[in-house]
Length: 109
Image (cartoon, helix red, strand yellow):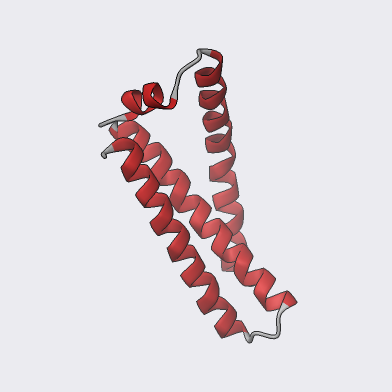
């Protein structure tokens, strides 16, 4: 893996670490308070803060995962580096699209 991709993957991991902890804390709080899915969705509707939080989470996770997929494909399959990069890039775009759709559904739909 080249240095640029290494730094991007480590940077996204550093960004995701506190996001994961916050997400887990919110989920723990919601379950301890006995909130239903409808209650949680009612609280997230129209919240730009939640959209920004989970949008950042989705972007970081998509970048992080696509770099990891590229490394795995390059090391464990006979795919040449460019093909592994294309497959990984498409996987990252798919993850970003699915995540953006989920964020939209939770916040705006």
